[in-house]
Length: 512
Ligand code: NAD
Image (tube, rainbow, N blue to C red; front, side):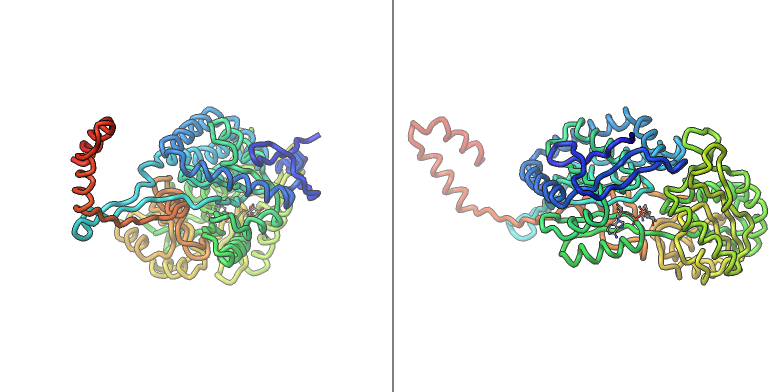
């Protein structure tokens, strides 16, 4: 029988008490690997209460001690890197190498959280007015919550809780119900790293669990990553409840190819960035915009994509794995069908792909369309599958106008040998993360992950300095000390009786 997915509430690993049961499956064959009872309302409330209690002491834990928990955690994550990747690969279907990358990008954020002392430093200015100094501190908010998607079950929880907790907050994590085993292992390792009881809570479940987090008065901030529709719902509901929110949502990322670009590089990079991870990446390149004669490489691109094969997680020849669920596959196949019906030319169709021995898996092969127009659903929808749409324009200006008209703004790339074209593109493009001859420009944790427009709702982004701002309040202190008081206290010290002699010299020293 399959494993029971445990929650972590008030320092205890427990089964969910709700009658709502979700089956976790292996996407390569759709067989059950675990069973998950959602958290009951009472369990959600108990987790929040425990996190609130833990906050009262964790907030005053010295910053160096908080940093040491992160150091131990980073070490444990590295020690368990392969183990985490194999759990992750089996529940998401990702290839082992891809799964290792998912874990590694999370480890880098935990590593960044070890710098919390310098990251959370305030500012000081002496003599803002005569004998008045102003200085600021960053202080934690309280209990924060994170709601994460299926496609990066290690990296995205690790975007959130290490930095939130390093800042002095406590945290309730509600990961995707589709791949909950990786987050469970992350939480176990965090406990092993010495995190005090109650600092991190893990709740599994669906909308009902999320809805309590969005409205509970003791949850001070919500960090969300997922689809556009849910992101908008989370942002509106949680801000209506006067919470601080950052909601990272869906995407439709364009890659602009100039005629002077290195053709081999473009083909290699486009293949990896469009169908890698089965296209289930918020930074996947899903639209290739060819400027002028750059479109001459489309036949070679098609041939390169045709060689790419999906496969199971431990098949070293597999380029990517299955989609997460039968529903995800059905949605992608439907969009491919609509693309053909709406007049796009399908140069490569992965609808019938399968993998020998794993015929029941959620396979979709690499798919390439050209003659795509902006009114087609394969252009307007985030496909989240291994599908690349090609469009052609005459000039760089037209390409920029096309990309800027998209409601999304997560990531974009330009391939060119021209510094001038690259400079114009980076300056004029209305997208938060830009790659120049780099296909998936996800910033490392000392920057922040900065999606724009419909790809992000909120003000402060994930990790980097922005995450510290998101997870803290700034307290600004303006202080004046009076000379009169100094001389008065000095007189008190001078007139101290002999019986006070043990304390008087210290006071005098302190006043010098
Ligand atoms: P999803 O929106 O379906 O689910 C995300 C989380 O929200 C899960 O924990 C889920 O349980 C919860 N949820 C789902 N429906 C809900 C509802 N009605 N009310 C409250 N909570 C609900 O997303 P997904 O399919 O798991 O992930 C894929 C999506 O995530 C894609 O759109 C992708 O672009 C996006 N994503 C964005 C980024 C980014 O940084 N912008 C990163 C990764 C993934």
